[in-house]
Length: 210
Length: 337
Ligand code: B12
Image (cartoon, rainbow over all chains, first blue to last red; front, side, top):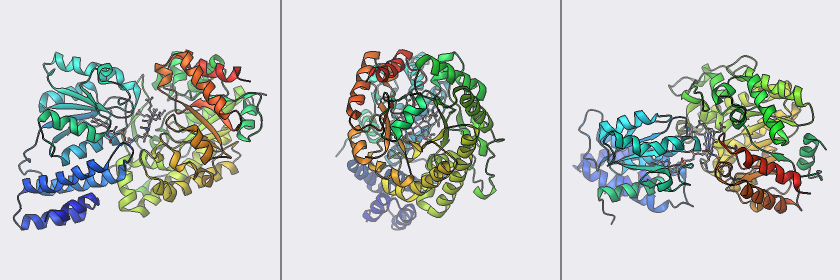
């Protein structure tokens, strides 16, 4: 029954995915079930398909958009937010405009049941840490495509510790950062791809992979 | 041979006195001169002065009148944020709020935004170096400009959802590129480099490139040739191997290859096109001069029999690079017989 939704999502067909969701709801399927059996299942299949060599950006963007559309239908503004695994704060730091990678990470996380707080691109460290303080996430994710933002990354953990947020994990990704090691950037994890980042988060929130 | 003659020889697969070397020094010229990047990007005269100083310091074969990737979008109505020590960034894209493309005016290069400052830089550079050194201008390629007018995600979704609308946007971007590039040639540029990172296979698949990007690039380069450009230089970052064989269809004479491209693959894909590259940009910050020298010699040897090569970085040399690393690359080219 869920197969048609999964197929529509994998096809990146947002309109069809929404039709399938409406049918499922009319048939009395719970929202939570639609998310785990439909949206998350589609993401898991996409994840399995995407290796570092085989990575079709547009395919992921379309699937991510369809999934985001489905979530909006299930939980329109004002409705109770879905029971999320955890919150994650993400952003691209000041001076960096590359935001495609960050946005993909956001879609992947959203479709996998995380609540994502997006601080956007060209975001100052202060603003990012303010959001971390407010949202109590399991992790903060930094996307960095240009090397000039590395000095900001190096300060992130220390500045968080100063504000009593040292227990929150910091993960990083994007072309400039993924060439470095976690130790050299003073972060907890470097993700080679959006899915790599997802796996790390799943691990720290204790999600089991079947 | 002077620098320009040397580059022309390489472009035509003739024997230059030595392999030309083009360091892609853009904002680094400001840092070298102790000038703030934010000022460099806004003042054509200052930019030209910094470029000339860097030329004198390093002794490579080309100078660049290049500010950043936001000149055209700003001139069309996008709002930028300027900072002292960084390139400016787009704060709001002109088409992001649903503004109708048909209401946008084609920017006049002699009036709009920083375009006149860039033309001023071109004029000064050409006056100073004449025909001894290559004077390179810069325009954004149609795909990159489309993503800079609308935002990259929205532009990609538009291409999929409403291909005709996207083609319309690309057409508008093509007109801007032609007009701005031709003005640069008129102001004295030997050629305007076409900067097209958003068409990278990192972003779009090859069939998309063939269908949308190639015809627009062809229009741009045809217009540049007619206006007297010395050569058509295409600059696309990332793993471009799957699209290189298409470049001749866009009339490309000089193809930039990034560090992640295997030069042997590029030679095979483009047997008759001059190539420039491909030292890793990050290495200019992290590596030691000996490593840059070794990598330069490796490339020079690799291309020794074929010719049609300009020693260069794979992409922009990061502003914060170590001068001794750039110097090591230039020395390698100068010493190789
Ligand atoms: C498209 C592009 C642009 C577009 C960006 C449009 C936009 N709004 O995003 C434009 C034209 C604006 C642009 C401008 C510039 N660019 Co640019 N650009 C690129 C290019 C070709 C592709 C980037 C991209 O979108 N890739 C696709 C996405 C999906 O990949 P991704 O970001 O890596 O994300 C994936 C993973 O890394 C991961 N991920 C990303 N972030 C995060 C975060 C977390 C927490 C996690 C878990 C995962 C994760 O998820 C994604 C999916 O798996 C790259 C080349 C490259 N190899 O990266 C150069 C590149 C990033 N650019 C570069 C440069 C130098 C510039 C400019 C400075 C050029 C100039 N002189 O003006 C300007 C910078 C402007 C600025 N201030 O930021 C250099 C940076 C090198 C360096 N030394 O710093 C690169 C690497 C090119 C190169 N080979 O040298 N660019």
